[in-house]
Amino acid sequence: MPELPEVEGVVRALAPIAIGRTIQNVTVSDTVIKSKQLGKEAVIKGITTEDFIVDMAGMTIENVTRRSKYIYFHLMKDGNTCLLVSHLGMTGAWFTVDSVDDITEMKFRNHVHVVFTLEGGGLLVYSDIRRFGELRLLGCEADHPPLLKMAPEPFATGARKHFLEFAAMPKYARKPIKEVIMDGHVLSGCGNIYATEAIYKMKIHPERNTERISLKRKNELFDVIVAILQESIDAGGSSISDYRNINGEAGTMQDRLKMYGRKFCPACGSATESMKIAGRTSVYCPTCQK
Image (cartoon, rainbow, N blue to C red):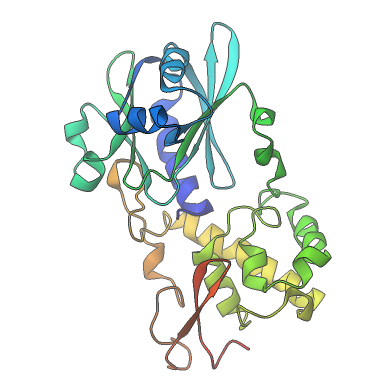
């Protein structure tokens, strides 16, 4: 699943192309339409496909920003502001093309689910192979309360204080540290990839209870997480599995990962082991991480 650096890369690539453009019309795939007719919430959330198509037509994209792992399209229509919130799920991807046929990877071209035709030419396309992503049209962020519960951005003033205070709460203190730093209420944007890298660098076992880590070490861990997230942003994110930046572009952070997906520890040479934590496979070095 794309994490903060990958989503940041999408936003930085989309913004200069999308800002200032007006959406002329919208088409939605038969797959999504049929799913919605069956009462399922595939891709387009909280609104019928018919209403989504009508409401989005005529919207001007005023800005494109990121909040944690979400993309925010700030919209304006008839003097009213709206917010289109996009989460990429496991396999979501955005493309800016003249034609759907211009999407080079067949797996994305075969799973196009929403196409925004832009005035003046060009398409803004959302593709999602497994359809775990979402597009949610809101009047404002508060219209979807879970968005308000996200932790501060890790680079923001107050993020460290928030992290340390939440990690000390009884509901988190007795959980494995890996699970805690992947929790978006505690720390925004850090998922399995970068949590794996951070605790490896700190030589902390992923299953160690958070309360068994000193305040000093938690402070150091926070610094390591922020540094790794920034490094990945600078590298264009990690292009692992079905993640791509816009138009199929790949990042290079996967070449710098020390523990995620590795069979041997680069420090001591030991074979890595894995376990499930919070439903995710956690790879670690049994020698270095205690």
